[in-house]
Length: 368
Image (tube, rainbow, N blue to C red; front, side, top):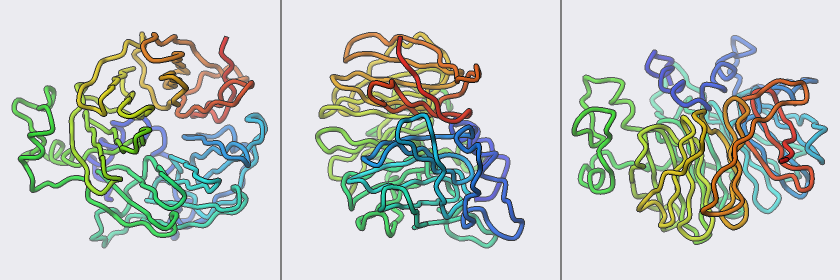
């Protein structure tokens, strides 16, 4: 994807991308793309930019800039793994003990031995003569519904699917640009992009034309098996047939949503820019704004039992609620060094509290 001013502006519009982008564009070898270089083993990798974290029986795993994959048994001491990419990794997922991580340059890496060794399954860095619209597009989130079937979503409406455990990935189209009737029937006109905006844009307006393919920031599955995607400019998609077809909807908030959580059938929570949180009990047919009391962007979250949730974001903000219908309580997290990080991911760690990751690395949050 060429680094035009519009390209850079649109990536910076999502704070999560803005955190990761400067590192993704720094090749360590002028003749070789970082997507296919091995990650450098760095002694302070656990204090570098980390963007997501998961847990398996083998322990905790976090991913971030320069292809860093870190593992920990207790969430405190972290060990870097050798990984065959130097591109920023934005997301990590697990199913049946197998791990997949994905990120910039369309990179997807895969581990079947508890994170000890990794294989690069996909890399699509941008090249000067490319005709492939998926080249150079970063993957923002990855989800596996079982050990064989998974999805990856990313910038410019990137959708990839696998049916062989992540060995191969097939691009899929999530938007039918020729079906204007569907777009109008399933969306509410945006209020901040011009009167009468129905997601079709005049080619003379380059910035709006580019946003006809919104960034897809997060994908989740509810307990009933439905798939949902949240993205920029109020974009929301859902599938009731395992990802074969997608329905395009609009959120009542026109800004970007960076994450989405799911519980029982139809219960969703989307969160993102400027502390905005929306909740739905009917798989996105209707949404209710949830008061957070903060105006900073929320970049990561984790679903807790009974509709509870923990959300994290910029300036160390942490929001928690014990269950559906209860208000969020806001606190601020500091690293052991006293630094206040921008938090991008969070994961329960048992009696230890919660593992949080962000631009200062990994830390432990212990609720008061």
